[in-house]
Image: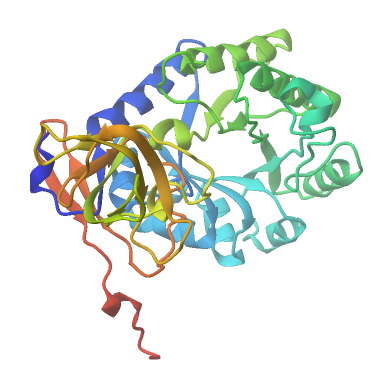
Length: 394
């Protein structure tokens, strides 16, 4: 691909790589389960163009707020192709989703009360999120001695039992699914096998007759020397098969696994300063906010794209962003060819939790290009402008 025609800063969306991830996860699941569903995690990357691509590739939209629900609807997802999670549901969208056949997993107690406002004379399916303390089910994968969660209804207290009894007392409501999303730093298949084992124990304990188990997200994508989609699918299946529950529909909500690798970020060097005898500061038109909004990384999977070659080496070059923040420093190069204005840097695997967490700080959101399966390049989001921030009230 020729990057010289692209205007920086910009994100680049690789449609073929996106499809490869979705089809790879689906194929892995379908070798072990008769019924599967992939919910594209909108919170991980909410680019409307990517949502529409996910819909065309057979994904559902996994949303965690009323705003995301509305965005999914605008991108063509009918309610029965939406997985609705999280505590930030509005009553209006919650009732529409349940009535429309969405996978709706209860997260807050008020949602249980909202069920009473559904029109009478119909039957409705609902799911519920189970609270999981990783320290109790898989200590090797826990972050500390008490890796509890703020989400879901706990069976270690009376919360899950109370919610279950309330739901079962409603004549028009059927509990159809269990949601067990938790993520770990290890992302190990071992953790998923154990969390599914815990869920299977809950299903047996309460004699639940369910349609689906929503395992959530947190998986590695297509990376060498990491667990594969097949490894995760096998972990789910091993636990469910032990409990004769492998007939459940398995729903996954991969975010990072689907969105990281299809997106790259291209920036250009705009200025160079020599600040002492050995250190050069390299300023780019991108920012750490674009590719590392948590400010945790010290280096990136990247390519340096010089405008020309045969340059002398420099002892220390610090590559920085375009903001006025002193700590907007991305990475350093030692004894590397000299960088000059006009050179470009391409960062790979930056699609997860970057575009959705990038603030409109100093420089508004950059443009996005899409590369089609046949190599054509299209601008699918123009850069934000100051006028976009002006509302009628202003």
